[in-house]
Length: 314
Image (cartoon, rainbow, N blue to C red; front, side):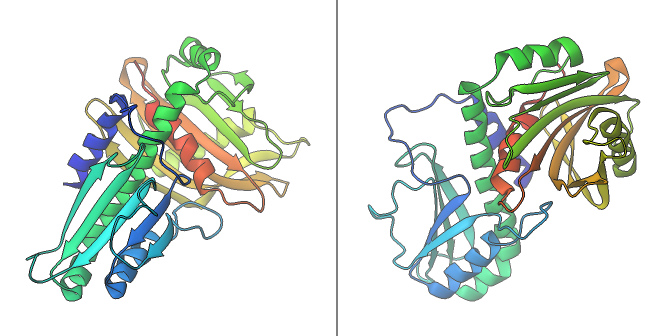
């Protein structure tokens, strides 16, 4: 069910917008949670507020605002993500999750979690948590992907194709650039919330975490030096995690972790997608990394991740 849900939401990137709906309110990854059952709502809140993976400091997966009436009234109807939790033994026989997209505004997701009682909800929370967080994340990713379609950088995208033979969406604010051998870097070059997007490749088809980390270190050392000769970007190896995302025609090897500048105090999170290009006997990596000292980084990283999901070899 989770794989089906993921595929369905990824395919929604190309859906035509309903222009009759008003724009939703709130920031990405903000959720309004409403229920008349406080204990049940707290279970769902706890799941949504778990820390993001791959960030240098604690940040929740979602910023939750909790209300107590269990109704979608005018006060919350325009929110971009609404989760309604209801427990009633007369109405429900098992725990379930249903959702509706763009019910009152756009982009928007309204999720309904129901169960006969709190004990049943607690028992099924591991399953419901996976479905709920994946659903909300993919909804936000699709919204970011749509934003990229309207605010992209065509010049940088042509450069990515001409140099790397990769098709990808690149945000319009990433205007600073650097090219190297099988390497392309783009950045907004902001002093306080720097977002960076890279494309690079290495020979073969090995996408293991150890090989990816070693190749990343080598490529970044050559192409992303610091201000002094002994400074260069490196990967904090013990922080790197990998998962595989299978789409219709693409298998993505997704990595998250932390980077730091050897010989300097700079550092931050990164996320990368590796695609095996059998036709050219290479692994192509699309990566986003952030430098934002003393700031929250979740949304900065996830906006870059939308570009990664858009990356295709053909």
